[in-house]
Image 1 (cartoon, one colour):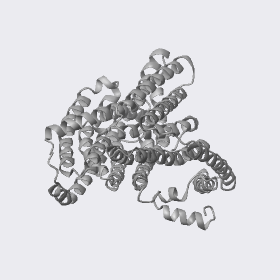
Image 2: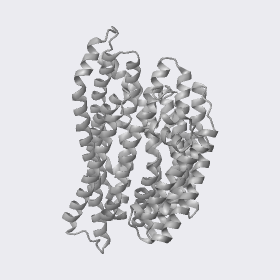
Image 3: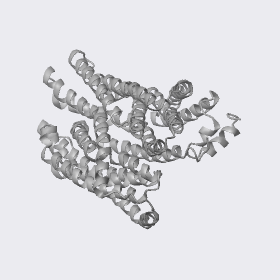
Image 4: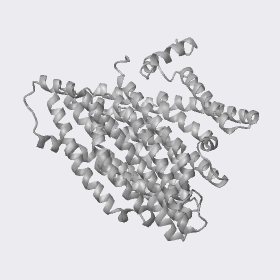
Length: 550
């Protein structure tokens, strides 16, 4: 396998780097935001955000994936005119669907969330409309197997989001309350939390606007090349805009349903924990919202960082697999699927082990907590570690099935898993004292179930047989060695320096080096596979210099 042959790994690496940078930016600003808004404010924000996410999924979020699949198929046979008609039809689609969804979210906010989160959810409403146009532009360039534009726009989006979120939350609380001090009375605490959450929601929209302006500028710069391609297109079967819109609808709808079901998990958990639990056990709703705020803001946000690579790999895989299937190259499709799963596991497994071993210092590095909040966040992050691997694999395999044209299978699989998760979470919340750990257990079961069902479906679709040793066992063994070293280095440095932050940063750097060495010593990667990574030739050169590879 040559570097050119595995160019989609490089493209995925570019998108993954942007995704990880974006998530790190998001994680870094969560700490000062949490200090400004407080746990209760973050609880209101996350409750509203979960429902905003679902409406976004149902309306426009899946557009980039669906667009890249359809246009890639047209580009594979050099139908440039039809590809551009699909692009223009998609713009019309998102303007209509996004507009309806935004209005529904604004005027129907009270149907989704309870009183204090309603104004927060309404603040999210315009973002749904704007994101649709951004999604079309991102999907258009992803179809050309170019992830740089999307990557840069993601980083710009997150930087703008961070700046506006913190600034708006600060100004709204200061303007409405007179100071940042926490009021002594409950009504004052609620008012402060609501305005802080509204400021946080404003930042999300601002980030999308900035990303849209960037992508529009990139499209404008490439408009000349696009027109030249259309001019030399000799195909006579030009599709009408009506046909293009029909095709978009037929392809986008399964993507939407799949994404909606896959992301329904957080909404179900939100409802079970904040509505069912207090109603049945007569618990304090404010306290539950605060604990939910800690859970969503800290352990969930941290655990989502490793899945950025899986999401990037999935985005890079869809046009590649779609083109291979369009060309009836099933052997090539199997090869790409195997390589993408292996690469994702090589990244995800050590991340899960590292976060399990270093959960407390990592949480302490990023957030300023009370002792009670630190214990809660640490325990939940450790419990979420296994789900990191499952979520990465389920995300990737769902998109692989979409690329293979098996658009309904991920929907069915996610629906089955969601039913299992809902029943498990409800039973554990009502009949045990596990509290938020019940949600973690249900989440892990959900992602794990999708993994198993999707793997079976991929095997049936293209005859793919999962390789076990180099994909799972060797990365697992190398990660176990890495975890032991990371823990020892952290504890040793902590005794010497008495600084958890210095100790954990050095421990993470040492752990990454140890994992790379152990992975090569156990022959988990071949030279060709390593060259397929971004800057792979440098990694190969380093490995040979250190006598880790012949």
